[in-house]
Amino acid sequence: MSNQIITPYEVKTDENGVDYNKLIQEFGTTPISSEIITKIQQITNQPVHPLLRRGTYFSHRSLDQLLTDIESNKPFYVYTGRGPSAESMHIGHLLQFEFTKYLQDAFNVQVVIQLTDDEKFYYKDLTLEQATKLAYENMKDIIACGFNPEKTFIFVDSNYMGYLYHNIVKINKCLTQNQIKNTMGLQDNDNLGKYSYPPIQIAPAFSTSFPHLFPQKENVRCLVPCGVDQDPFFRIARDVAHRLKYHKPAVIHSKFLPGLKGVNSKMSSSDPTTCILLTDTPAQIKNKINRKAFSGGKVDLDEHRKYGGDVTVDVAYHYLTFFLDDDQELESIKEKYTRGEMLTSELKKIAIDLITKKVLNYQERRKNLTDDIINQFIKI
Ligand code: TRP
Image (cartoon, rainbow, N blue to C red; front, side, top):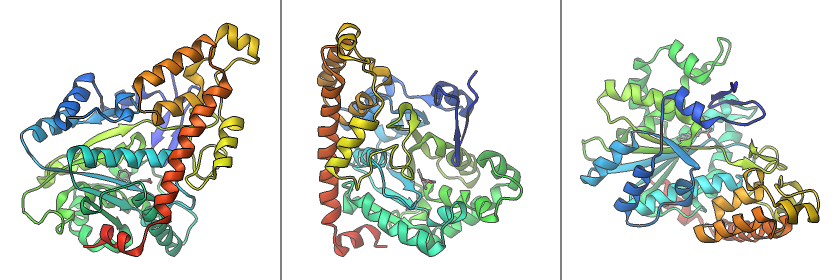
């Protein structure tokens, strides 16, 4: 029996890491089936994103229904967000936002992105001014992931609140203190901000929160890609949607991306030894992967040649499953490594080269952002 607690604010597991099957049962979500993947492929007329194909996005709520609606030409939008924390984003964030961008391009839909300076202020040791400043810095990090300015709206809570407020008021009336306390894992002595925050993250899942994007009266469906720890918010969102006569948002959940220390560890941008940051230099990336990434290789060359490496625990290999699009190449690396033909140093070099290229491209885009470009994403 694994003894795990997963809320938006706490991830506690035993030494085997998160048991995702158990989470699906506990949360009452649905695994992403091969039928769903085939359907997405048919609708978008292109191969699905590797994170979907390879199971990082592993679970959903009513994605099947949304796809059926999309097939009959019902419009939808994509909503995701980020809590601006003190540190730079890491490659896991880059992947998550790239996935959102893939949805934007593949379905040709509007994306909205929430930056929750209020949330981080309630939960972290930050002044509100610092949190807001970080939100605007993170906004640039996110824009540099490559979003289409014509179809992306990014907002900071403390600034956009007036537009959200109508829906927040309506959501508030549907909820009790008890419900929030239990779903979010709060205590009686937690500050009131923590209790008041969930409706703020829920409101953007309803299209009427964006009158400038969806001026027509009709409600537009919403799809939320998020880390599975964020599911409690959208479970509540789906409950209240019914009462407010809105569409229930569909949700697609991702696993946590493994940190350098092991496939069951988490990337945390507050501990730079656990992850590759988007501000790292090529030398730092190389160093981190060579020295810190947990390896499934054997203790010495003879053993490795004889018994081969274990990809299931190898962090560099896991990173390849995220960053290497080519299925055949990935399969061939796996075979060679498992047979002991490929050494850990060789496997790591492939990961280093791929990730370095990706991070350098990202840094170039971040550097070239101008105020004019940023304004395209925040204009109302
Ligand atoms: N609470 C999230 C965090 O701390 C940020 C967030 C806001 C979010 N809205 C979202 C995440 C919608 C996913 C989907 O990072």
